Length: 90
Image (cartoon, rainbow, N blue to C red; front, side, top):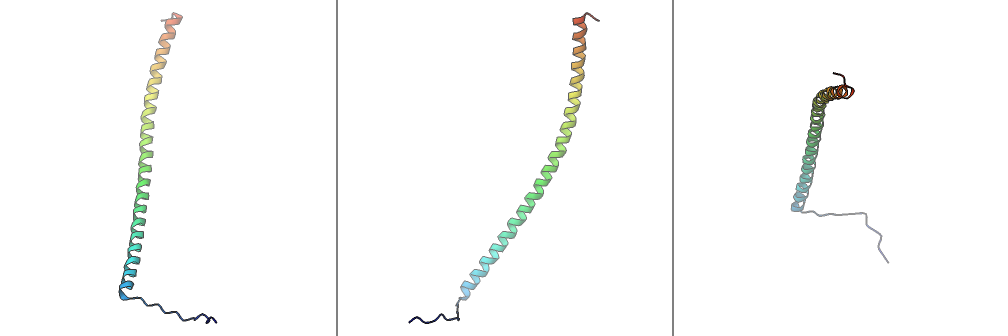
């Protein structure tokens, strides 16, 4: 006949194993916080890059806008000149 299960449990851990377990847990915690810090640093750098890119894009848009208006004026002058030549007006 089988004996009923005993509710007593004894675990024997040597000091060497206990120290290794503590070192392992501390190492895992340190790695987690190190990775978390790097992730936060990367996040802040990405935000800075986005902000800088938006500012740069605004500057480029302003420059392109000035160039476009200058070229439109040149094309308008060329069109007026060609129109006056075609229609015989001078």
